[in-house]
Length: 123
Image (cartoon, rainbow, N blue to C red):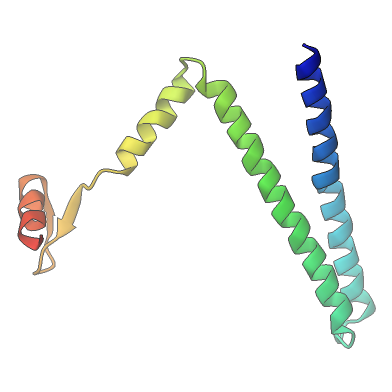
């Protein structure tokens, strides 16, 4: 248990150092960008606006990474159970990877056996 607690502490420190409070920092960066546009409506000081935009982009990217990681954590938590959610996600890929039909050389949509024939003729 001590090792798990130690690992949890280290991960929390890493999270704060790497991401900080992403939503708060994103809001602050957006506010700085808005103020830069208000203070310079003719965009005479482009460097300041570009720096503010770059900061907003950086925080948006961090936010996206954070949510992507959280979704994977949810997936692992829900996926380990024999749940409806897990079965739905597992079968989703099978549905997505199925070729339902193809267009032949005349531009006609072919399905089932005709689809197989078109694929065989092509290769």
